[in-house]
Image (tube, rainbow, N blue to C red):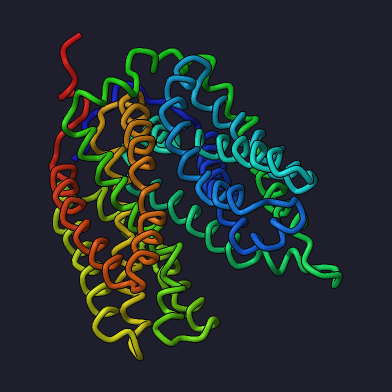
Length: 406
């Protein structure tokens, strides 16, 4: 159950439509900066070029950048306005995405990638605050809208970057594959030009609450750990599940399809879960229903990966859909847009630092043991603290009530 907000924008019907459009196109462009790199990594390494260390840094940049920028964005928004920061983030994203496809120095490619990801990270952290500010009574519905758009952007950029790079019939042009997502980001700028006027009279309302204040709250830490462990699971699975399937005897094509089942499960659930969470007073049963799918998928894959790989992939994909639930809770566990921005910034910055351990740790364990069993068992064990922190976060409480009196 949500509390009555104290900082709400009163929009006309046209303005509300413009806000929804802005949120949809912004969310669509939050993932391609990172997800378009993996399918084209071999061509990028040859064309820039990038060494092993630089390629490794490139694959970890998204998590690091989201962690670093996530803590800064709410404070920046309190100074200049949440809509302006979102617009600047999109401009930075579009410009740097295009520019990095036309450089041939490894360090410059990495710098431009970081800048592009910084623009996406700032907007990503502020998205729950935007929803709370404009649609305080429809947090679940609008979270469903933007998490679904985010999932579609992730899926399309992963699937289409290579085909787009091959248009023209003269081999794979990685600059073309990367540049396509600069075009979609540039298009997304247009509605935000019409939204920056809100900050002329709304921007000063968020100055009192910073990300640092979340450190003193149990709810802030519960949300951060839950988000971090969920993201750790997701990044580990996205990074290694296809290889696990190939080592289990599946062909490269089938392994890719099985990974597609994992990621594709998030699209319909990104619609359903936030809506359900927004309508429920107690989200614990919803969390439980999602979390029980993790052990089904992990244990099933360990015991008998073939021929039921599709079933284990689907179960793991459903488990990974705790992501839209936690994003919805950011808006539900705060009374105001400023509380939402601070909670979102702390949850995502601290959470992504924790998540960075996931894909790296799974790779290290596999290299040390020569098997995926230990890695999967560790991921399974980490489901318990994720569930416990999630249970705390799903109870009806508000972050503002846990802050020390000022």
